[in-house]
Image (cartoon, rainbow, N blue to C red):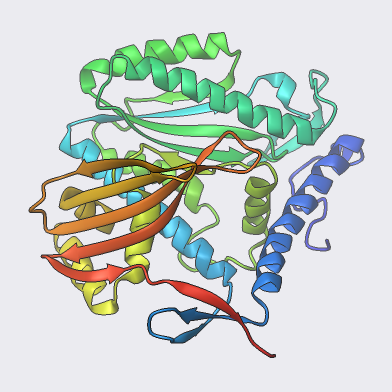
Length: 379
């Protein structure tokens, strides 16, 4: 891949001659390739096919737009993050920003700062893995474990806990983790003590804990976290051509890394994306105007004024039905969902498939899922 050479990753001339430098650059190339391979598979699958609306008979194109899909994905995440920020303000919570970096033996190389640039400078003699790939996979699992333990301990005394978590690669593509917690002011000291214990327990290095800097400004804390998400994903980016973004996309796919996760809310991101996609321009325009006048996100506007009725069916037990409800039945927005619960083949992870969705504004049905079938066409 010509776009990646030794100048793409800042490193010293001496380190650039090592096998470890080559392994790092090969991994960048592999991630870059993985992103394009995934996109090409989508194009190949959809080639010579169109969608037909089973009810109306309308025929629609069946194309895959990588840039559009990625933009929708990241914009919806930002909407939810801003909603969590507003919920934190509603509950008078304060922000705590935390960074966790893996122990030394996960890192294939060490770096140092040369003037204003940090460069990979030498091989890490403490590296304990057989390959960089193994270190990345093991590091992600390790950080997930760190978060689970930390979250569970904080949740024991902070019942209103809200969070946003972001994974980001180092120059070596080994992951590190940023977390933004929102807690009650009286629990800040407890959280710091828990943090210190976790650092020692998991032998973490180059960690960061910052509460004081953001206490007076929740919005500043959220923007600080989002800079990691937006580093190469601003409004003007060409998602399909940006080299770093392609590598990041391939990185998350190759190693099954969830870049951004946050507090589970009754209004899921899946449902929000579907609603936003199904609403016509007039309906979404009216909602957007409300949000502009209140200086809030669309996700927050829906979440704060919605009634949700969710029916969950089990694939392996059709008669087993569970119903969850959230919000007041006389709410401005109403969302009715039917989803199917199943186990992914060969996996223990439980997944959900959205079978039906109906969305109402002031009792009027404004969006619903339509059934489509794939048809083959001559090209």
